[in-house]
Figure 1 (cartoon, rainbow, N blue to C red):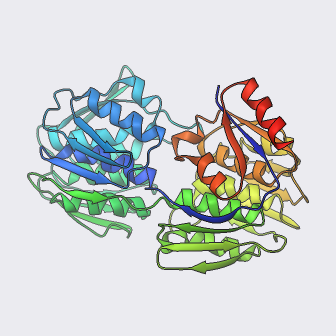
Figure 2: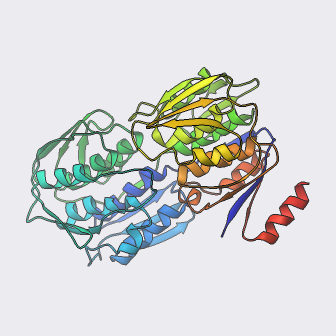
Figure 3: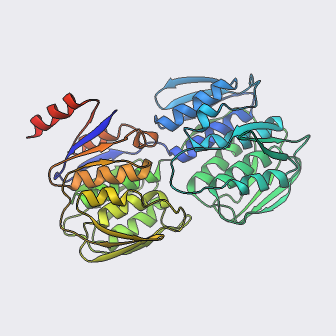
Length: 430
């Protein structure tokens, strides 16, 4: 079983290049099969979730040509199977985007109920409500969501809760429905905007993405396009909080600073200096961290996907901090692992009360999910001694070459496959 082994104590210093946004890429790849023409997608992150989705798309008949690590050509003209295999969906939740794509293009889709990280209940009722409003018959049978329609017709859809997945899935299906669709209380996340821009580049007619009302005029067909995915704000935020926790000086490059405002404002509050450039953000932490309070909210609020990373930094801040998780109920499972490293955090319901400590100490910890795993790596980078992080397959779902990028900033971290490699690392770092 692969592990990360880390000798902490080095401030992270230097520049790091941020890859394409995983959450945007997953939906864009699914949407690419909605035309019979070939679509070229660039700035694709080379992470496990992306590779699993591409396999799932090949399984239903899409032609996938990975021209290089970050570029793919997709042709959906030969899709003959509208049923996605459970093997893929149990590994990544975002396979459900194939529902909206297949339903929009073929008026028929069968996708197993989704898997992914176990961070709390993420119901898909809003997705199904949207499909039904467009005229689809939707049933759940034998563990599959089965959706079909003779034709899809535009509709007025009000989402009961803000849902990124439902907004994107409904937007895809509605882009090839007859007439006009209005989605109210839509999610405003940057990757919702990116998917809308991608669909528009294929000939869809979507207006208002990035606001809470999205208007879609259905079109008969979509066409070829070339498209580059936006940078990953969560990967960028992870390196920014790693800079804070290690008292470092890191410039994250290839980012859209506007997408990072929730993170940069909190970093300023806890005592970091921030320098914003056109497509980069520099984080300098030259003195001790101060406490603050954080509540996760839909965009433009503080992202739930950055909550574990800021908690790892706040556990080293002077004073008391409160982190409130308002999106997912199981998102504090990593706190017990941070406690092994000396953190003083008490969880009550959806709130973590943090009393800052002077330092972490290295320990063997286990990654419970993708972002929590990244937070444990951050703690290991800041800790005295050696930290071993197990279950890093979760981390590899969403971070490309994570250990390599950290090493380029001066971190002592290695991916090891067995006890012998682990002992070799211990001997080398002393």
